[in-house]
Amino acid sequence: GQQLNQSPQSMFIQEGEDVSMNCTSSSIFNTWLWYKQEPGEGPVLLIALYKAGELTSNGRLTAQFGITRKDSFLNISASIPSDVGIYFCAGQLNTGNQFYFGTGTSLTVIP
Amino acid sequence: DAGVTQSPTHLIKTRGQQVTLRCSPISGHKSVSWYQQVLGQGPQFIFQYYEKEERGRGNFPDRFSARQFPNYSSELNVNALLLGDSALYLCASSEYPGLKQYFGPGTRLTVT
Image (tube, rainbow over all chains, first blue to last red; front, side, top):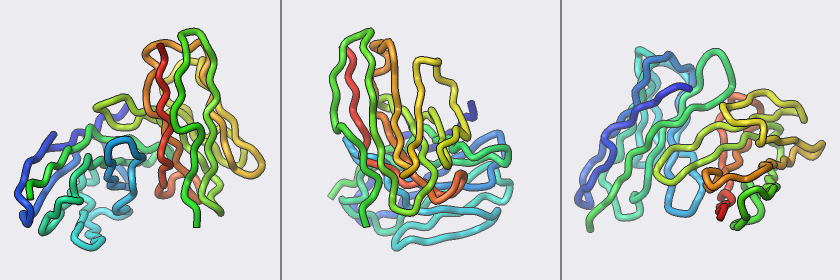
């Protein structure tokens, strides 16, 4: 299957700081999705990206579809304690409808 | 509007048994996908269904099967359970295959 690598694997930040994480692959994707998952719950869709170079915001969250179509980035501004969770990227190839998920970035916000 | 619902929430089974998990998609969504999420990893694709037909299958053994009903709800069946099948099973729905997916809360399966 496709390998989507997310970095960093984990982050420990102070409340109020900005956060940046990314997702990379060796394959070209035509859709990128970003999810947040909290313990014991299903992933919650944050942002969807459909075009190379696209920049989309959802409140304090901003995500970008990399121009090479092999990567995507998520930024969180002015982090708050409720941002804690695991963030997953998911990509869809041109050749099918399946979404491949990344390895996740665990975010801890210290008040 | 109600989101994706899954039942049961938790399930404990013994090795060799069979299990059926259920999913109801968001109203208006015609495609359902199933994922397995092992602790510490991202979700792994199992199946995708659209209009009662299988549209995609991940790298899982034939012990795993699924179906979609006329009302677009879906069931995932796993036969001859193994300890390694213990995981969170997630259902996601979308309007059509390939569009953004919304997940349910999952069913936590424990095989002893």
